[in-house]
Every structure is written in C-alpha cells, then in structure tokens.
Image 1 (cartoon, chains in turn brown, orange):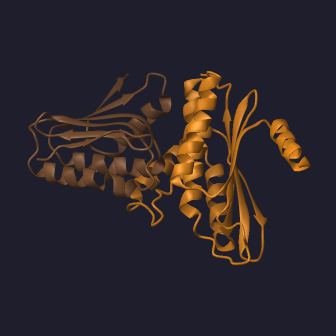
Image 2 (cartoon, rainbow over the protein chains, first blue to last red; image 1 turned 60 degrees about the vertical axis):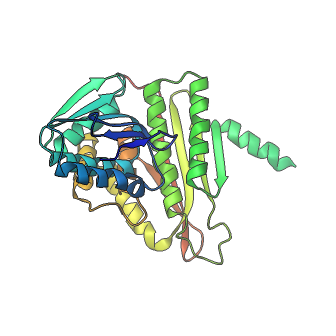
Image 3 (tube, one colour; image 1 turned 30 degrees about the horizontal axis):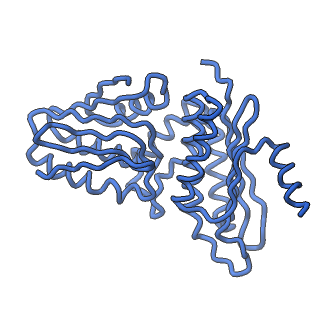
Length: 120
Length: 185
C-alpha cells in the first residue's frame, strides 16, 4: 500500500500512514479551511487498509490543537478504526492540556476502540 | 487626521491588543492567529489560557470566513466586511467579532446561542457529544455546527451577543466571548 506522509503546516497536521512499518500518526495542528477535503484521502486510505490490515494497529493522535470541523473528521477516522480488529488509539496530550485530555476521553466514549492516554 | 488619535484612544481605553477590519479569509485567519500568539508569548501568558484564547479565536474567525458570502444586498456596501478584536485586561481576554448576517438567520442564531447559554458545563458536554455523533457529515459550508458550543465550553462563560438592524434585510451580529486569566485550578 502507498505511504501517506504529509508535513505539518500552521493549519494542517503532520500525517504518516505507513502500513509496512506499522506507523499511523496524526500530530500537530488541525484547522484547515476545508476539513472534509483535507481528510478525505486519509479516510480513503483507511478504507483500503481495513480490507487487509496488519495483525495489530496502534494509531497515534498527538494533536496540539484541532478545530470543531476537524473534530467531526477525527470521529470519522475513529469510526473507521473501530471496524479494524486489534486497533488501539494512543491519545497524547500535553501534560497541562486538560481540554485535549477531555477531548480524548469524549472520543473514547463515542467509539468502541480502546484508548491509551499518554502525556508528552 | 484627528480620527487617528480618536481611534487610538478607543483602543487604549478598551485595552484592545488587536483589531482587524475587512475581508476574512483563511490566510487572514492564520495571520491574525499568529499575531495574537506572538502577543501572548511575548508576555509569557499561561499555556492553558493561551490555548483557550487560540481555540475561541479559530472558531470565531472561521465562522466569519464560512458565512462571509451570504450577504447579497446591493444596498449594503460593507457586505464582505467584518470586524474581529481581542481585548486584554488584568483578569480576562475578550474576544469579539462583528459581521453582517441576513435577517432570516437572526432568529436561528439567537435561538442557538440562547440554548447554549441555558446549559451548564455538563449540559454543554452532552450537547456537543450528541451533535458530533448524530450529525451526518459537515454542513455545506464545511462546518460541524459545533463552533458556538465549543466556544462556550472553552470559555466557561456565557456567550454575549447582539443583533443591530442595518436595513430591512441585514443585521449586524456581534459576539463576545470571555476567557478568564485567573483560572483557579
């Protein structure tokens, strides 16, 4: 499968989706002008991946900030991950960022995927 | 030239650290955010407060960008023009925006904001979760319909708003969000 490797910008996150090396990570800031358009390739990639996934998938979210339009798309990503066996979400938040911790907790209550919370 | 001094005085008395008036785009949004961030970094603002201000600013600015093309009134010259301001006081940041909206939308906006203001912390959390879970995709404007709720949650205060009629088809929508600086943890 092709590798998605996007550099982060001031309004879009860094994204790595690399099946062979088992790296699945979204980090940085997410406030694109058009969230649906920005995340569509990620959702398409996950559809493809879900057909023949790795035995284990650890998906890392290490977001510094995301806007409300992105939060809807993050939920869409989590909903796709929900369908993939042996998936765990690693939700990172800055140690003094209670809002990001709470956001992770809320997402974990909306989908049936185990979350691990980690600080950085 | 006196208006320059007058404007300066208003900004100083109101403790406005940033005012932008004009057309709003994603590029402008990024610039305004960068300026406000630099300003807060320069005074060593607490990171929790900084994040909350940033958060409310993004929702506020992107709301204006998303809805800026809705005014189609040939009699109103400033249809693409909106204002965004940040005030900083000892104990709070005040994030204010103003933009023209069609009168048809006033009732809907007012209803949404009043409903949000009627909810407490737990109610807002529940409302947010219900909306994000049950909405089918984004609106045609690319929003999640969560902006005001998020602003209220991050602020922890009621959202203040006002609609000033401009003419029979448009009103000026003002929105004010407060972020307390002396948050006791």
